[in-house]
Length: 212
Image 1 (spheres, rainbow, N blue to C red):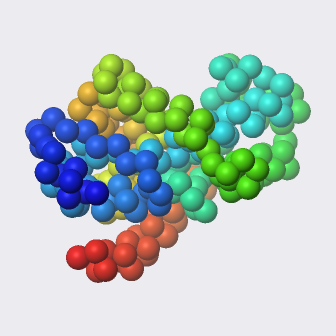
Image 2 (cartoon, rainbow, N blue to C red; image 1 turned 30 degrees about the vertical axis):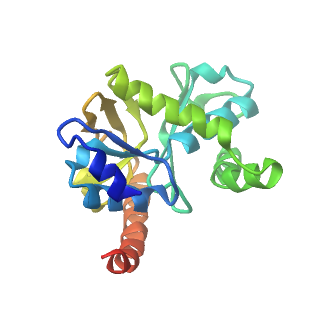
């Protein structure tokens, strides 16, 4: 459908939100085929994964969901990266919260990573949750909210990652990607992001020649 999207225009102001999977691959392809500035092409990325992640943490720790903050970055897929370094409930770092331990962290991330397949198996699709994730991105664009969201966009150096689309902390507003923030992460989280980028690049190297 990208040819029809391109024909619709207008190029100066169009913001394209890619939702279809594999979302990171298709975001990169869309940015290339549409001829738009890359900052005007956004993929849903790990926004839905992040919502699920926070929900599972809050449920397990019996914490208020609205005060539970954590991020999933990288690929919307097997190489996604949990960002424990900034995870918190209220203003309390997650690793200081009563009941938190490394085994629980691994358990919750494993369930988050497999939650898409779990939802499909149990009810056939994730329509309601993905609808909320899409709404968050569209609200940020239409209302110029400049929200910090884990959405996918083409990378040109953030965390040393180039020439792939994946999720990093992204300020989203009326112009699309307002900024990509290289917030402080643990070294193993940065390594995970770079590994995620390398995995996506390998897929792109296979896919792009077929498209062209």
